[in-house]
Length: 166
Length: 287
Image 1 (cartoon, helix red, strand yellow):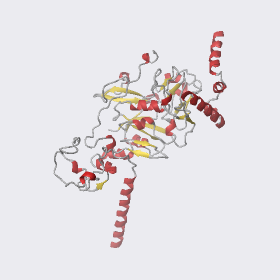
Image 2 (image 1 turned 120 degrees about the vertical axis):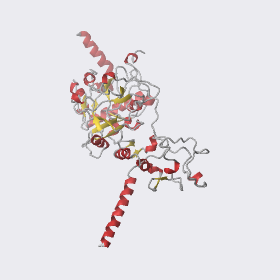
Image 3 (image 1 turned 30 degrees about the horizontal axis):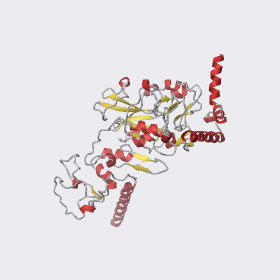
């Protein structure tokens, strides 16, 4: 009896793992919008000592102004300390930057659900018979300051009275 | 009577003074052409475009697939009125750029709190940046009605609904009476009042006969959901350009499509639904 139970649990864990793996392979995402030359982060960080104290950065990354629940968190709540080329989920799981939507989805669950269904965000390319690319959250929202910035609109249409005058 | 005949003769004369012109004048309605006749027409058109624009334009006549009915979704809680879609459409679909300036998408601005009042809509808004506080933006284009009034009024059947639900125009059959423009409650159609002004350098060479091939003077044109793209499985140009991901597209008959998901899970409405036009263009609110 115990063996059967054990077998069942082993199988179900296995199934669960493959399901998780399949779920993460499912999204053909665009490449994350790194600033030029900044990735891999380990280029610099590999030689630096890990400092887990929350502080204002004075020497590097000074252009980053965290405006995203900045009172509650800082860099190493999302960036993985020991290996900077990865991100870290709240449960401690280490993920790639190409899976960053899972990180965002931890708080923004309803948006994540819509994103997976293709209702939030943008998909480009072929919806059938070709390559389709899903934009990552960070392709449109700056993760450090995610509110969408106002844009200059394209020019309004010509008024009819000036269409044929010239 | 005499003068009428003379005018008719003149216009026929100017159009048909070459062999190709004569053939074009006598060409059949697109839906009555045999495959051979279609090929002939395409060859003639491609030659004409090569001469006019110095470019090899590839004209497709790809028909609708069965089991497909295209539908469009537009998220009113995300649109910021930036008009990127308007100009991506113009570029993709070879519209006349200036004199006349033809656009298939019109973005209207509405005051928050009176969204229903289209009388106060403004489409010439031009602030420094969008969105402006207190306003909503609503892009309007052909709604690809299942019961299209424009098709019903056309006296020569130059416009019709394809099996995949796209309303198209045979530009060669259109007589320019503009009844369809009067019948459309969405201002979805525009007219080439003058010879279209399409710079040769900006011609999009991947075209569909019933969609974005370069047009001529005196014909009506409209949004076709980018028929040249969607029949190949590609998203329409306006969907791809939108910086806020406002625009959604898919097959209404596919229960797993994006469009079906939003219809089933979001608050959805169709514009002027009470006219019984049965549009396949769904405005929704995601937030």
